[in-house]
Image (cartoon, rainbow, N blue to C red; front, side):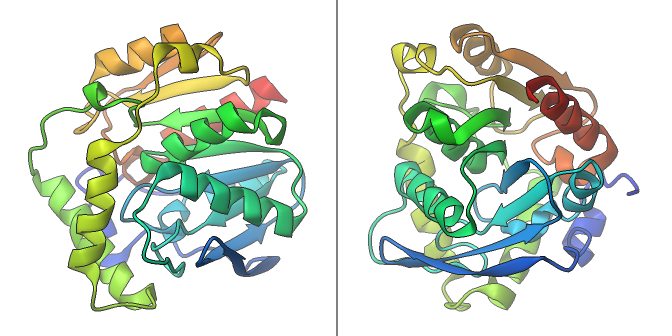
Length: 267
């Protein structure tokens, strides 16, 4: 379906594949923001939550694949990201989790599996912890649950290309297209201080969880992934060879295969 893009050259120039025509899309008002979502296909619901500074268009390689597998696929632009707006409050993962619940209520989704990427993974796991009846499983890709899990940041050409694409998309989609630098600063404050889950909190998570990390992830320590997998009850650990923090774009076939295997396991 998709060629590999390990260096994100294609992503910087063109973005991911365009999202297909949706069954429904629109905005949901919640906590001072208008949250954009779109729904595709029919079947058991899967909600895809993108990473920090990105938007739902980053899932262009995943949506058609999961629709083909018989799922209703929902994408959501996190508050302040993509088409979604925000108010003056600082970003928090718990606030973004409340946005997801508002979309689920509006779209008539009682329960869903979650595929979370980076910040989206953290939001997904918070939902699993606080609203387990709404979450049937979490595919937790490339994220930490406390500050000790992150590596010291080092800019690379791949990260720079991803950042360039994020800037272009923000300027094209956002209601505040001239505020990209402020947006990055505000999201970065959240990333630097959250999440702060304890081992006890992680041990209380009851839904099926797959902890997934690329072999060359630029941001997350592999030992943190080990810790999460050993602390969350019955979690499995999946290491993806040859990819980094951007596996859904770099090698979509590999990523999609692991997501579908997880969904089959929890159904």
